[in-house]
Length: 283
Image 1 (cartoon, rainbow, N blue to C red):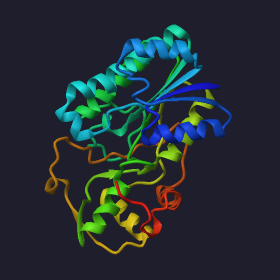
Image 2 (cartoon, helix red, strand yellow):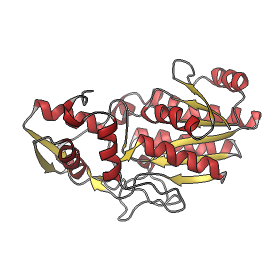
Image 3 (cartoon, rainbow, N blue to C red):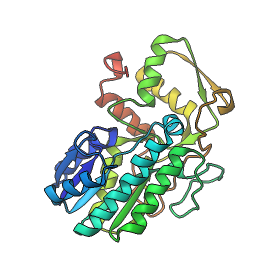
């Protein structure tokens, strides 16, 4: 299958660009400088030029706090971008797989969120990503929406930030009352390939298995990397940020591809990225 990837320089986009050819697909990977999804004309020209059978939209404005400050930009990329792709894909007869987030939920639930639980975003990032989902579902008939959470890979991410801070400080304070399923971008890419190869349109939740607080995640990072640093658990109220975060950001894999446990994935990431031994780990 010929697949066009948007946002190819992001953590997920990079993994998709490598994983798809490994699975026998032809991948056309376009960065933001090569295709700005917010530009409807550019989207039309890209689809016409490359004639993909399927488009994976991995382009997004993912700076959660930045979205609060630049809501127009967030809406342009996270909502209007998917709208443009959906309309053009429908006209050209190609499928669209759109990548979304756990931030479409408010986090007040007490169990992992299932795909069709009511969405209720509490941040500009969540609202714009939900708007993007809605455009995709209503403007094209051949769609997949894949939500994930806590994604890390090659590039700026929580794992690298924690390792950098551990070199600068003896004590780190990390939130212990917000829960996620940390997801390795390489595993997410493989899960997405599973979704598209099954050819069953719909809404999916794809994360690594298991869940933890950000505090637990940080402790596991340092334990695997052999870093000695004191990690103090704190409530989110002691670490105020411009954008609200869902306290429960855990997604249920009901009806979706199941990935390996997050601890196993993290260990693989640290080994692959040569973080062990301190050779890598800076932002």
